[in-house]
Length: 186
Image: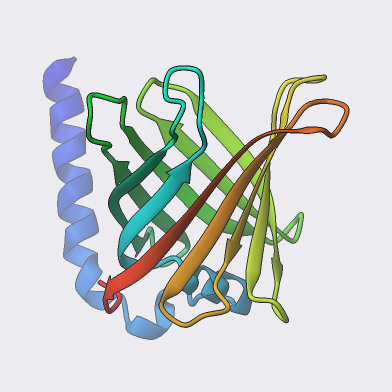
C-alpha cells in the first residue's frame, strides 16, 4: 500500500511540474482591490510596543521587535510574522497571522496563531478615508472584546492600538505600538 501511495504521489508531482511551464501569467489569479489593501502590511518592519504597568511590572514595558509580512498562495493571503522579545526575563511574543479578504462576507478575515498554541480569529473592516483597519477578535460569549486598530495614514508607518473591553464595555487593557517599515516589500 505504501508503494502505491508513493507511486501515486510521484506521478502527481511529475504531472503537476510537467504542466507548470504552460501556466501563463494571465492564468494566475490577480489581487482584487480589496486584497490590495493588505499591501499596507507587507514588508519588513521594526516594531515598538508600549505594555502598560501590571502588578508584576509596575513600570510597564517598552518592547522592540520585528514584523515581516509577505504575499503567498497566489497572492491571495498575507502571512505576517511578529517577534517581540523584551529584556529582563519577561515573556516575549511570537505570533503568526494569516490575512485575506472574504468576497462572500465582504470583510477581511485574520487568523492569529500564538506561541502557546492559541488561535484567534478576527473580522476586520478597512476605512479608506482614514487608512485604518479595525479588527474585532471573536471571543467567548460574555467574555472580553478585543479590538485592534491599525492606522496606515502616515507612509511607512503602522500605528496600532489593541483595546480590551469587559462585557459591559469598560476598557480593562490597552497596548499601543508603532511599526516602521525597514525595507521595500519582499
